[in-house]
Image 1 (cartoon, rainbow, N blue to C red):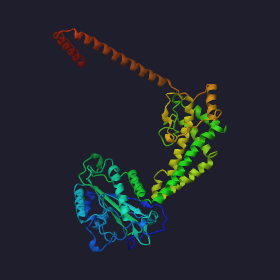
Image 2 (cartoon, one colour; image 1 turned 60 degrees about the vertical axis):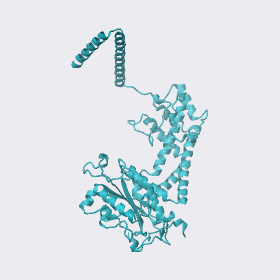
Image 3 (cartoon, rainbow, N blue to C red; image 1 turned 90 degrees about the horizontal axis):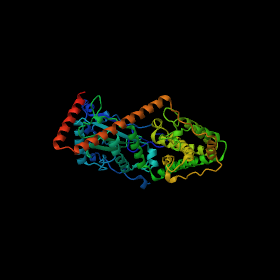
Image 4 (tube, rainbow, N blue to C red; image 1 turned 60 degrees about the horizontal axis):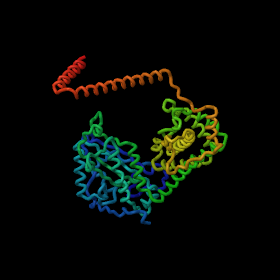
Length: 496
């Protein structure tokens, strides 16, 4: 929303989506059809407008989501990026090398933009919309003096452009270090601060991976994952030391609670009888041929589908046990863990907005999955101890950083030792893998085929040795006659 002035940003909104980054693009073909030029986005210095640089200062050293205008409409407004009613600097444009492009720089920029359009390339735009409350919180804006730390904002944008250029599409956008032209600008004429980033490839795009399969035009869509990473880097670069410390404290509390729950779970299971039957059910469902190597696997959660994991039956029982633990002996620690996780969710929603947050797995859910996986792996590791040997697989130590691991010493009369003793005494072990008749026949056929192949290879080797011995005792004439016969025999076999 236009404010009728500069740096008159709305404050005390307390809404979600403090920093967002919508993106769009326009192809050269579309712009040409409308008679538009990429170079018209920028104009030369605004010194005749008597625009001063007085509100560009480091603020910490002094006392509804705004989306960008459609890129086609931007091209229709000559000098949109440098329009006097939106900027406060004589030279407001910037790029990787300079925070303020002068007239010569702008002249070169306009030439590069025209070259890119002549080569049929696609112009990309990312627009950062930043709420004033977030700027104030991070010492970037003073609502009383209207001072704004524009240099810090520009440097944050400079910090992320290479990620977008290199990883935003199937291949790096540029084919050489100088093959991408980009520029940015800060606009201060709306209720939220807007920063724009435009970029385009200069040389003609001929790589199939970078061309649209139907139109043959250069692709414009940027990977959402890279866009989100770029936005996260942008925010981190601008966050004040105080804000970072507060956030780190929440992350640290979550990490400590997860570690405590995971470690305490083994002591609870081992020292009380009420979970013995649950542990025994898991133990007898473990696949026999994987003994000593039981673990959750390379997933972020327990797999309970038998078609996807041979550990599925044991994992189902494991989930029941973990749920029982977290709602009984460990319920207080788990409740605190959930509270801190919800704080992380609130921080993410405030940063990104509700709609964006709904499109990704909540931080709390990711942390909860990690906790359950680590708890399961710790229990499986205790079962693996029953079969520990010199050649045991040490790769099972996946549930936490090895440098922080403290091996649990189980009690001599605890649940884990009782399960081991009872299984050995009764001859009961983990379930054995059932091999069907069809599978057995298939294995036999494979083995017989390997035997026949080995015999053929052995016969070939002996024949070669005999031939070499014969050749050593032949004269040159006899060797030539032998080679001719062998060639005739080979040709005859080939014709057959």
